[in-house]
Length: 261
Length: 255
Image (cartoon, rainbow over all chains, first blue to last red; front, side):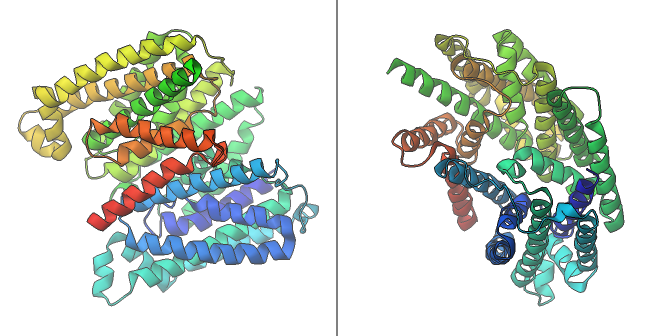
């Protein structure tokens, strides 16, 4: 089960590109992840479809990111997440639950090296992108759009490109998860999972490697809780209390969330 | 027909109360209080024991969240960090209800008990409306909402005023939980659709009196679309979301 920690770290690393580098609450990150998970049921075609769908959706979301105010974008991204969950539920209802994934084309669980290797690749790409000039520019735009305009940079282009890159990384992480577990359901789009992601993203603060390391340790800690001698409902409750409490503490004391220069 | 009317009344009361709570928190404390969804389920479970227990404990929990988190954050910084912390608060309360009530499924107690929360809500809303529009307390709250630092410099005790408000909001969400429990089966996963209908109503209007009315219309549309099989029940959440998107778009155009 420790392999799950690698995937979670890759997931948070890719998400940090918008949450922390892009300076906004990117609450629809699980939607891109879910495209990958559901795409993994259909092998190469699923991957191809995932990339096309991700690029299309990311262009739209990136456009709105550059046009809407910060609060409006946050509410929009949360709405997109819930709407996606409802659409998946609706599809499941219409197809009589036949849409669930029972087998995948790539059986990653047959080798214990594939998951860490691909996760590390995604983390590496995220880390590289973080330090590029484009990353610095997106951060500056996130803090002050007018400043970026003064430097003759188009915020819209920069943000759309950044969103597409992040979306593809998130989709790849979801594809990895789906191929490893051979299983997917709508839970990944639920609020609990979003809150887990946000906590993992913000727990490490603004520094790149702190964020990656702490997300990994946090994932291992959450898995260790499952060995407590309680039934699964109480363990689920304990997990929620810990995640929620950590998120409150992070929101209270991490200055970078609250202050925009 | 009576059942349908009771169900609609229960739904309206829940969405109306929740939207009222979200609207007030946003207007005065500048926080989109998503934590109310967890408080709502906790209130529904508690009301199985006693209605007043539900109101009192939810009010206290909401005030504790205010004391612990909101009061220490400046007004400008509250939007983003407040949203995150309120999500965390909702998760903590949801986790606590899982631990305390072990994910029990509680069947409706007595359908006609829905009128008790309605009566209580009517009294509370009227009292609050009087305070909000006809009293010094309401004027002070509006001053705090406009500029907290300025209000404090004028001698208004923002801490006490906001504490009373957060107690009130927690109490009405506890009432919403009680109304829900009197009509519907309660389990840890229910209620978010209703919360979102309330949320849509809260952000789609700027007038306090319109909030519950709009919540009612959103619910009516949602229920009618599902009732006549125009959309599957699972897609009913799309209706309040559409309200949210349209409102945001209109606000953006206006700005």
